[in-house]
Image 1 (spheres, rainbow, N blue to C red):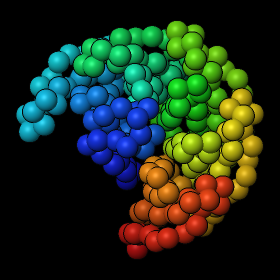
Image 2 (image 1 turned 30 degrees about the vertical axis):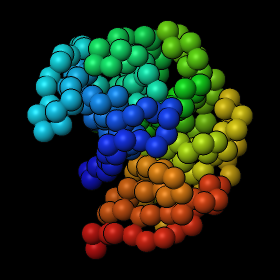
Image 3 (image 1 turned 135 degrees about the vertical axis):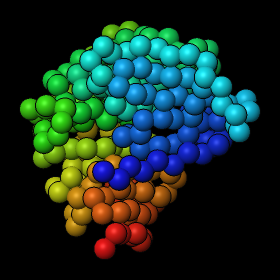
Image 4 (image 1 turned 120 degrees about the horizontal axis):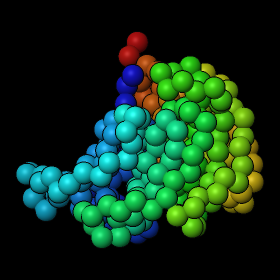
Length: 238
């Protein structure tokens, strides 16, 4: 599977913080607060980037005994870690010293996650090696990171990655299309639009640009009007 990640040395979003990376919800590594965080099957590994040409490993945090850690997403002083059975919240308020805060458990399934400080949004799906038996978008109130609370579940076709841009959430629902939600009311997302024509796997909103990963390449959309993505260009593998 083609994976897409964009790393930006200094994010323009103050909520993400300086030296923060921007990546898709299927990413397995990210940069936050001038540190590199990498997940593997069991653990979160931390590297110092004071000398970018020579990263220094600072330590590892065990998150699972089952080899199920999959994805990582940064927001502010937190990392949101997706696994086959849970979303873990990790504090990085002390840069380079990640500390476990809390978890939200769900049905066993692959688990991309994005967050905005108040809510974390997770997709679970079938048809993969994670053994999932549900296809849905789930929203968790994470204002108390020690005890995330499930607030809604929306049934979808086969959702993969997802991306946040302000009050809009983009969900890559594979062959069913790119689904756009208004999350002004975070607990009650409103479905606004579905873009079809590709099998969407993941997406990264950057300003007025939405980079989407599809099964055979990449498609770019203008999201100046976030509710109605406008096709710009594509790079496909035939």
